[in-house]
Image 1: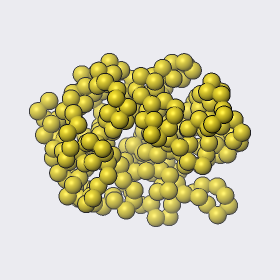
Image 2: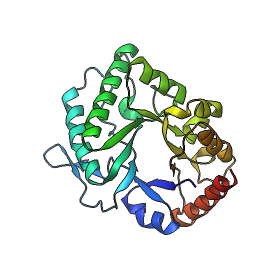
Image 3: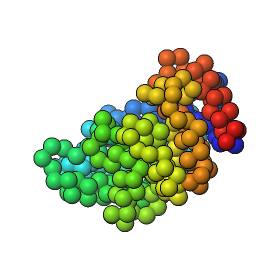
Length: 257
């Protein structure tokens, strides 16, 4: 059976466990990793979660990863601090989702090839720093409303291959797949490259409340060879009861499959 978790900040952890999740996928920016008074980064004094198997939202938006005018030393310093902090709150081999749409957006006037090369450098650097802390970085495609770089699973795979980036898998997120109009066949066909999954229902409401093809998405993941956990990432009105219902719905679909 599939493990189902949820992406939440610290304020939602208690409700998530009460709802019956198998794990919590904490957010990093503004939750686990926060600015320190000396201009660097520190572990939030309010963070008190059990060691987690996966984390979301790696970079703050103010770090411009594809902008040649932005100091690379600031990006590298953030990675060194953030990965150490995440490592202190992670299970061995935990996954870090590299979405961070605003941070990786190509600025106006910047050559696309140059921006892609810069982003490849950051991703490679993130992979290597993460590995020192027994963490794994995964690349998440985001739809065009969130970023203008890497908007589909197919584009993510092509980006990794273009720059010869090994040891990095791709996140299959149903919200971005549907918003981008990508076929679920891609989820199945690229199954060997998928290392994590996120799920939501239509418009990012809780699973079971909408009309998106949840069973087909789960089936495409499994048929493609992905057998790992799936994290709910959506907008809740009342987290605990809605998440409890979503988990029951997803587990029923998983059992039927």
